[in-house]
Amino acid sequence: MGGVEVGAKDFGSGQKRSGVSRGVAVLDFILRLVAIVATLASAIAMGTTNESLPFFTQFIRFRAKYNDLPTFTFFVVANSIVSAYLVLSLAFSIFHIIRSGGGQKSRVVLIFFDTGMLALLTAGASAAAAIVYLAHKGNTRTNWFAICQQYNSFCERISGSLIGSFGGIIVLILLILISAATLSRR
Image (tube, rainbow, N blue to C red; front, top):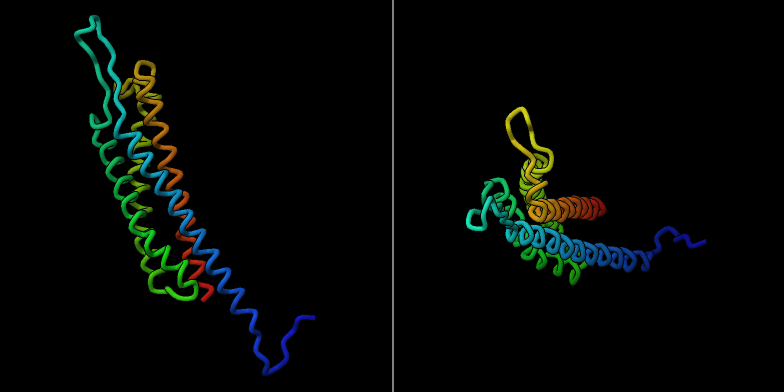
C-alpha cells in the first residue's frame, strides 16, 4: 500500500521534495528570463520610438518622440530599472537551483524586492497606458486630439511596448506567488 510503519523513516520523501524544489527554482529562473526579455524589449521599443510628418512643405515637419511626454520617459526608466534588477536577481535564482533545499532568507529578500519592482513597473505601465489611450481616442472636452490617425507607426510602437510591460507585470506576479508558495511549504 505504500505506507510507512510507526518509527520507520521514509527515505524517498526527501528526494521528492528536493526534486520539486529544484523544479520550482528552475521555473523561477525561466520566468525571470522571460520578464527580462519583456521589460527590456518594452524599454527599447518605447525609447527608440519617433516619427516625423511633413507639414505643408518638406522643410516644416512635426515629430513625435517618446521623450516629448514625461510619462513615456518614466515608462522607459521604470522598465530599465526592473530589467536591471531582474538580471541581478538571476544570481539568487541560480543559487536556489544549486541549493534546492536552502535559501529561505534569500526567498524573503526576493519577495520583498520583486514586490517593489512590481509596484514600479505597474506605475510606469499604467501611466503610459493612460497617455496611449489619449493618443488613440483623444479627449474633446480638454482639446486633446487623437494623434494616432496621423502618427500611425508611433502609436503602434508605443502600444506594443505596453503589451511587453504588462506581460512583465504578470510574470512578476507569478514570481512572487511561486516564492511565497515555496516559503509556505517549508
